[in-house]
Image (tube, rainbow over all chains, first blue to last red; front, top):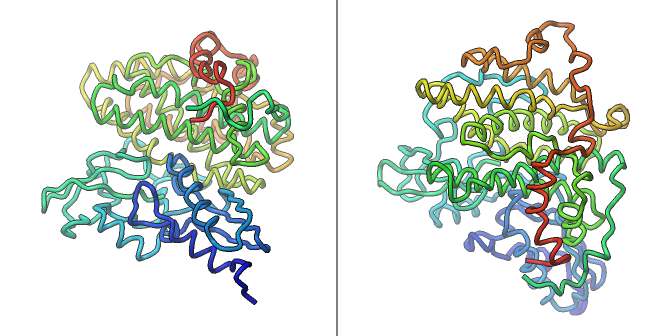
Length: 182
Length: 284
């Protein structure tokens, strides 16, 4: 039974889920699918999060913001936050709402999780290394987040943050960013 | 930056570096850490803005990958002091990266040749480790391989571009490959206690077997590019069914045993650890 002094798992989970990503404020920790587990034992809260991009510099800020958000809940006395790698976070954990928010922020959402397309597990690469490739980004096309056109090209596989690349829309002549498929 | 961190580095103890799991993970972490430091050379001085961005990002990725591996070796993976101690608080002879990683960046051709050799090696090694019985190692390998795909595509892109880019580009890449290849083989130097790592299920395939897979990938590309003679002669029949890494290929103990050159001991290490040694326990 819920009392005023013992926080519920749902309450804590909702507070964690509402924490915005410091680099993409319209998107929250919940929408990114970063929550692995939330446990509550009396006033002690344990939260397990899955880091998105392993080298994401925002990870420490997210930890701090989650701690602050949960510490403010009545009855919470101790907050333990742990980042775990098993299972690995993949881009398909982002919710539909997260996709919509990314688009509204000018970022094309991912289209799938880490397609290591030309490398077969346990075997040799299925394409010869020298085989000619189509235009960059053609094997990972992204519609323009502004106008929806599919006439877009990848300009650079590396962008302003480790998890995004840079694209250009030939229809509305607008550069945009795309969340990498991880 | 502040130096009043609650945990001072002198209170942190290194784990047992000879423990099997630690020994294996350190080879991965240290390769990435040192590779990241050498790639960061190009920040601000790469031949184009795109390459400045590319190598700066790859450098940042690699150093963070090292950080993730070090996290597996400390009790609490949020314990920054313990992670930093592992990454920056060791003597040079306690680092387990391959010597290739510590070489100076050279010219852009050398950097690209090493990048290509290293990232194909790293892709195979991570693929192997996705099958490790150690769940954490397997999960991190899976995750990092998704991210490393961008590095591999970058390396392959430049390989193709230079091979087809005219005589000077092809020639300079060819010379760089000639220089890099003999040392790149030592990425596959047998690890100390490798038999035990295999027996315990930590490491699903011998470094020798990984070397064969690497040759399967790079040898046809070298051949097609006209660089076939860059492969040492005793490795050219790698595609024979019963082929094994020739005895004597790894005739001495190098990076995997902590034996490094002055490029590390006198150059990368002092610079990489300068701030840490000056301000132990500093936090950013």
